[in-house]
Amino acid sequence: AAGVIQSPRHLIKEKRETATLKCYPIPRHDTVYWYQQGPGQDPQFLISFYEKMQSDKGSIPDRFSAQQFSDYHSELNMSSLELGDSALYFCASRPTRRDRAGDEQFFGPGTRLTVL
Amino acid sequence: GDSVTQMEGPVTLSEEAFLTINCTYTATGYPSLFWYVQYPGEGLQLLLKATKADDKGSNKGFEATYRKETTSFHLEKGSVQVSDSAVYFCALTNGGSQGNLIFGKGTKLSVKP
Image (cartoon, rainbow over all chains, first blue to last red; front, side, top):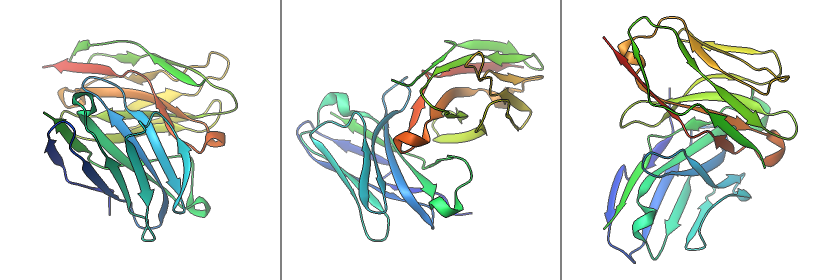
């Protein structure tokens, strides 16, 4: 079965650089979520999109922005990177509401961002 | 706001021991409850879920029952295996808030042969 695809899987950047993380949801999933997991921490919700519109916002810094495109893939853009941005970034997708049974989110493998 | 509290680890057990990881929650409305598992170096996988009070979620020998009266969703397994070694996260989502997940801090389980 198709799963959530994230790219790249690993990314190394210098401080003050920019990074773009990509997420391709499971086909027929119209809702995408982004989470950040610091070392040894629980995942923290950043932002979500439903039908290409931002639907909810969590603890996303102003330096970050995100969008969902017409093919439902999403990109997380991170600027002026700081050491503290080093983390695992997960994308999750959720089925279209008419197909939804429960509130299950399906997670991608994550992008590990290291800021030096 | 909504929150999840789970027992801190690490938890170390011998193979075939009984496992309980406690999880309690605070939420407005009627949240759905989940247990996710994260194996070393991997992403999050849904282990089980329950969407309403008294529901029991089960998978791979793990079980958890949604207890509204005690606001709990404790994870149990009767006989753990070495391959169960992972970090376990209890989480909730309240559909009224667009469904983002709120996680507990995670409990690291190590099972020794």
